[in-house]
Image (tube, rainbow, N blue to C red; front, side, top):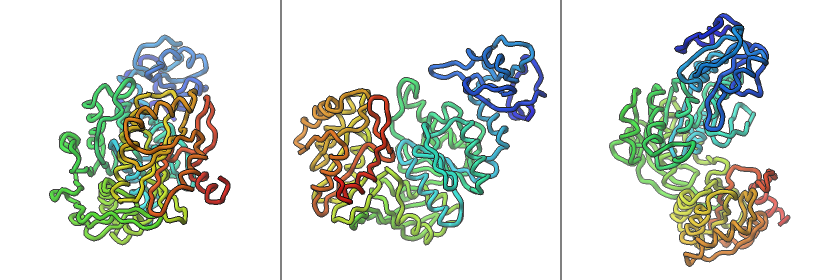
Length: 486
């Protein structure tokens, strides 16, 4: 492909060479430089790709895309842009032949609920016959392929690579989580999403190498409504007005508020063995009754957002109920059937706010006992340990303190920190270092009607100890206990 074709939607200056040169690959990692490639000099928090400009030229890069001037032989084409991250997004889209235009694209943003809502949209649309790809916190899903990920929103090159694979696998829809960092670092630049969905907003990701303050965090989230054709927003969120005030697309609202375009009413928590859910009525853009197989009133908003988009795409209320009644997301308030008269849940809650949220959600089902099992990661803030211990001590009837990812710390030392918070409360507890043994203890001591939540690991299938990741799946451990191995 000619360099000029990759630059067709960019403003740039050609400092030297010719844009007619042929490009054999698009690269932003100096370790992947190859003969004839276009190398993007990206400025990161801990590195600057401009420092590798000379090396790229020596290895045969045909084109360098830069923000700053570099000294390389005249045989190398040098393209100057204002922002190489933004340029990477547009160049990547061109390199893969603009695959987003071959798909219905849906982006979900917000502080909480992105993953659950994303998978709800997937389930609803698949029930109606669509083939849906996913890009999110847990994984990338393309047909039968499940690809682990490091970032909620991948780098722009990877996004368009995934889009291309989805189109080739006959997906007609992609739903993706759009993080604040994704917007800040231009990972989604140049994509005009067909649908954009906002769940909620609360302070998060504020600090070094993330967002300098809440105002910046909010402004990054709000960018979604400048990058989509139709917007859907939670009217009940306290930041709704700020998120939507500069929207350039029409916005439909959802919530419990009677002024919403889609309203949920008569919300009722439901429970059976191995089932916690929420039922509610719909009025407005959709009419009918919904039975959703995920617990908590907060999931009403997640479901409403997903239903808003699905309804716009022609999914019927009957199809919605088929999809949502048995809906679950791996590691997100995931009910694991045991066959016993207690309810076992795996959840990713790994900080005090998330643990408080899940425990309050489950407490609303009025179980005889609410049992909380969790640990804390090593080489992380001790404050998180104190806070999680105190939250569990206050909200759970019984707490089992165990190991999470100890990394390079001694598990017992981490547990001792958790106990500092726990002992501020009157909560009953036991500490069992080995997580396998702790889960076995929880299951063997659970009584009829109890709700047991295994918190912290969620979808993760490993435990990190002294720099090495060891396989550990809580679903597998639960099955081992049921099989009598523990």
